[in-house]
Length: 421
Image 1 (cartoon, rainbow, N blue to C red):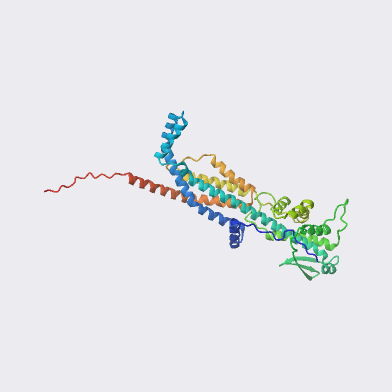
Image 2: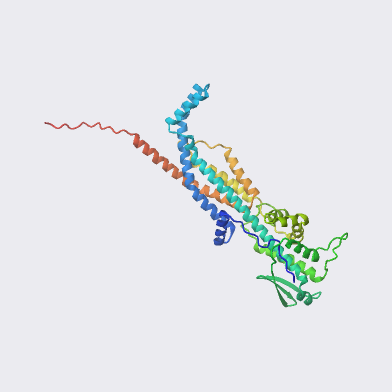
């Protein structure tokens, strides 16, 4: 029997810092979802220190700015006609209050840059992990389908089978366990070495034993035996079974590697081609461009095979709604906790809409893994906000008390004792 395999049976796993961390956590907890949740929790705890410093610095600068504002307004009114002179006078005010723009903005800039870097790199890592798992599952299904179809060319099977016989197939380890009328035939599932001809070989098998052609251009090579028909049914059944058994879900989300939306959790042809093209060599890209073997194989295995089964919806944008609500609550709680603190400026109401909208867009457009990361991160901010606020308040109280003690001048009004001579 001439065994066939996928064009890229051994896909290289994504490599990188975050990918390595996620894979290590997955090895411990058994799921990428829980790995992402752990990463989100750890990241938020690490940012607590920066959040506290940022809040403290921000409040300190707001207090100074409030004190400087009347003098700055007076300078602007008096020297507004001379920009150079006005800037000189403003610099004198900044020096008087020991206020530097760079020092005031540096903690906030460091915080923003680090959060942006983590956000962007982790998004890219989760996207790569999701794409890899999608195409890897598809390649497995394609491999199973092709090997079952290729049983048509196994002499032991074809000679043992006659029309009307009972046929059943299951995957046991790395073998196809074929049973005909109670008589077992174990067929080893082997994989040929990866080369640019693999997809063409798979297509040749499928085209020969599955594609019946049309009335205008019938497929003369089609072997329309009862065995061939049963093998096609079993190929679809086993590929579907493989998809269901290896699908990674979480709560109501059926496929964590796709966006949580009211569409099928099953991957589509466009994304499969897009993801696989990143692994192709130049020769493979040229072969696929000329023949579209991947598209033809996808039509048989998924569109006309596995895809006929209703797998339901992958979600209903619930993650998007949760992300927006939690982001709003996080902003509101942060401002509520800091309300009444000296130097605390009133939060712009527009931010209550902009930030939740940004979080909603990311959860709406990208993989459910990243959506879960965003939600867990926002929930951690919601939980940790009271803690960071209490720390900042206590810090401010300590600074104020220290300053008051320093400014107090102790005067002793008691009459001194004069020693009598």
